[in-house]
Image (cartoon, rainbow, N blue to C red; front, top):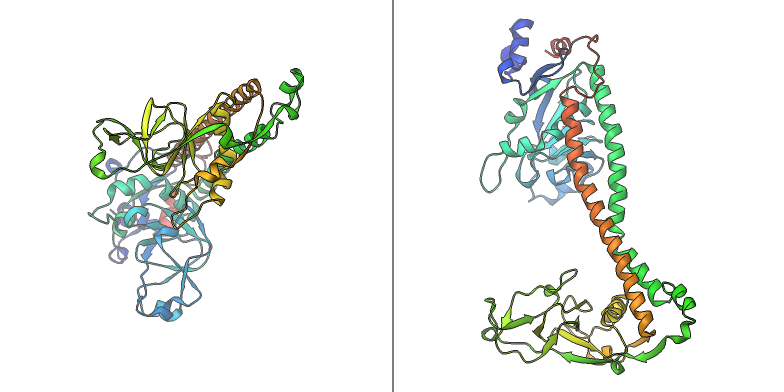
Length: 444
């Protein structure tokens, strides 16, 4: 374990070195011959901060950045949510740490998160702050601490708010390469991470743009652009689309609520659909049943949430039959319109529904639905349009899922890169360079 430096002052350099080096039998893994294992408390000075009294609001009206663990996001810190005064620092355990201090979260849900101070700042007591010696590059310590996050989490002690202590951090082993190799290791990590972050950004754009791309597809569908070639091939124009009032093409059912004693969660009776919480992305979630149904929605009906926080949402019923609550309307199409065509149309009219919500608990009236204007192509064009939209949507779903997998894998790849880096396996180490143990002697 790292020894008290005060007690070590009277020791010879050899004795100090013996205390600073991790015994062979305690070394976590093998490293290159010109590296050495020491402790994080040997190569950095560690401290923590404090929280000025909240009873003195004026303490929080200053200009000194004050870092909390929630602001540690594995990157540089250039600004903070709260700033404190010099008086706050003087009258609390808070203290200023210099630029390039490495910060590790010690408490609660943020344990193991790290950051680098890009500014001079104070911290609260949940932050362990490491100021590197001349023998250790601060970025090397940052990436190593980031690499060890899961280990720190496993080492956490306590019940309601588990924590790691400064002693755990100070006595934690760290492999030290020669200084030039530290720089090469950092450069290699950052080069690879930059490419991974770029890939993640592109993948995230695919995920984030999913709904926007769906909206663009539906816009093309209901302006006629998506099926333009089909119409030309069949000798039709947009004039074949008929404008009509929705009430002339559907049967609209309004739901009815039940008292608690009239429904159950034991699969007794028919499904009871109560609101938006029953709508998944592609199907209806059933978690209540009733033995006394009265307003029955059937398979193929379009279910529209007409009241409550999710009003305007729609889905096609994929069950045989179910009772619908007052928050739901069931829309049953006639032979002139395909239910999936109307569903996609409703998806383009979500804002229309939202803008027409009325009441303290916003809701859509039957009149709003029945008086909607809808353009209806020929039945064959509807069929073709639905096929095209579903095909494109399926491709978009596959692209989104692939992008999500890429995002998930990037974190794993980063850990693999760091593992190789701190094992000395990046291919950058030069055995002819002066051994890291000489650096350690200078530190001691």
